[in-house]
Length: 201
Length: 220
Image 1 (cartoon, rainbow over the protein chains, first blue to last red):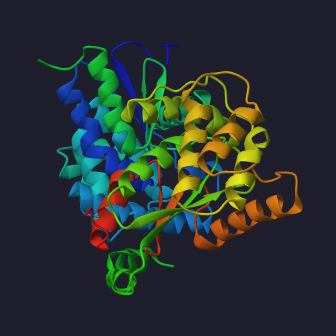
Image 2: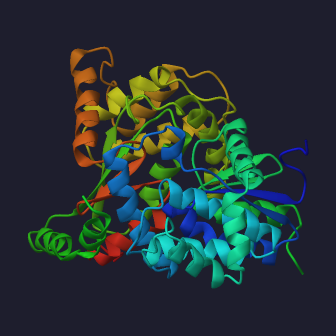
């Protein structure tokens, strides 16, 4: 098996159900524009579907905090539609397919915006098709990915790897073995990438 | 509570701004309630950053040290403590400091600092002590944690002998902070509460400054 992390590569663990992952989206993909790194999107199964619980106080704070952060970042937030369960599973499958098609950025941003700013229901074919086609993906290919057990295994592997590296939340960026947890640590990651001399001229 | 309601409430800042205006009109200053823990590097960063944020504003920091905190039954507790060191190094870099420690600090080992601060008189002297103590703890080196160097800081900055950390009053003062933190909403530290809203102080330092500005507590 290929090592989890190698030089000049960033593994980006992301959950479609995490609003902080959503906030990290545009700036996460910009890393690949600004630095000579191989940015690997790694969609993971939501915490709640992995048997972890989130206290009510944390849920309330998260929504309030994300609303403020979204405003600061100039990103829309709300209305949302919780993709927990089938919605997240289908979205993760299509994200793997999008990766294969070289349209990871388009799909992740389209689907996340659908979930967190447009209340698109991704458990329905109509909803998933909308976010997939506007990302430039062909719908039959997306449907095939949703039904492909090999793709489901890839998502499982991403999730297991997040656990193996000892992390618990998302988004997490891993560069040369160092973990950067949170959308508010992207600037710190950029400093490290600058130090490594990886900024594009 | 449904997300849309929480989002709507979060944008409704008029009551907080009015309350701040009333405080100013009656000659009172603004307050940042800071729930923090001496055993975590993110609190060190938050306290230093916040002390700088309130400088030049008519705002004081109410120091509310805690020892026990966190989500009940948190399965990631130990991993979070280890990660806190990694993250702490990055936070230190933001304020041109270098993290001195390479191992997590046991909360019980520095509980005496929480007790002293919880019993101390709130004000600039106590804030100076808290800043100096947490700087010494996290940015000065990796040596053993002894009580006496901190007692010297207390004598210099607050005056007199530090309170007895083994007294029932000390334990009760820290527990009162922990209860207050739970009532206020934060489930982890460091957390800063201003104008009815709380934020993780290590994650939102600039936003706390902006919020103070919005409340009218701008730099003079």
